Length: 118
Length: 112
Image (cartoon, rainbow over all chains, first blue to last red; front, side, top):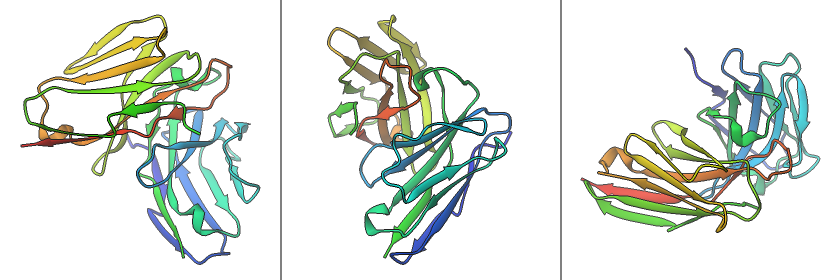
């Protein structure tokens, strides 16, 4: 079946613009994760959804970052008033397990959205 | 900040050789996972080892876990050019949260 898809694949924004990044998880996957990956680094956790509930947003770096998953499937990560330090690849992952610590889950990752803020 | 720290940061070997990568972490864990990332397939789960396991095999992959030293190793035997990728360990803290913590990764280059 189809894997996790993300759009757009590339986004260039001027500093101060708002951006919205979309994630389509694998159908039926309850858990959804967002990560930020800087060049040469590992992914950094941003937030976690179980269905439509955002159960962990401890990794969101500032109140300019907002994520939602209103119907428990597609998720959107919004970044307001983008800054140059927001430039990174944003990864979305989904998994079939829920209600357990993340390391029990095999996470299926999308290709990412590469955001460049000028 | 990232919990897992891999070493070496980069590794270059000839096809057919074995590659060993190490990961250290800071707090107690439930499980530890290894992921691979390359430009063609993105980030892909390789193997999961539970905190009560010491060794696990999957094809050409062998993972060990030493919870007393808070470290894990990933061995890839008989490497192939297609194994060229970045390899990350991922853990969580044993606090019941949902946060997955990745290390900075080891960049493996396998020369044909």
